[in-house]
Length: 93
Image (cartoon, rainbow, N blue to C red; front, side):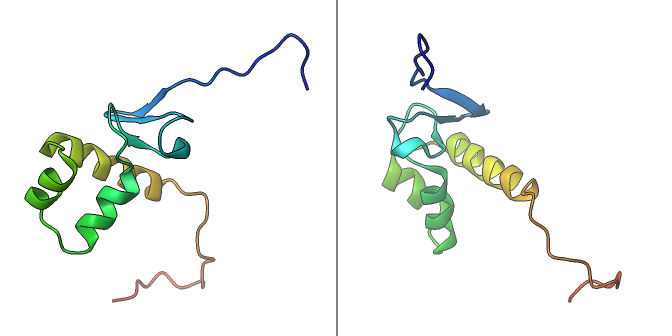
């Protein structure tokens, strides 16, 4: 433990329209100003719900939904884990 130092519980904007705070959704990335986490939005769209459904269910606007999708895309594109190369340059079709 560090004497004289206290860790502050702060809200961080981690991406345009997306924030994280230890007090909101256990620190998961959420749409700024809400307690709706990105995974819930993406998951709901993944079940086949429309943008209009998501807007109504979570009281979000289209821009907030797009922010969640952009963040999810960015995170998955920048994951450090990659499948090992098989030595072949051919892509699965």
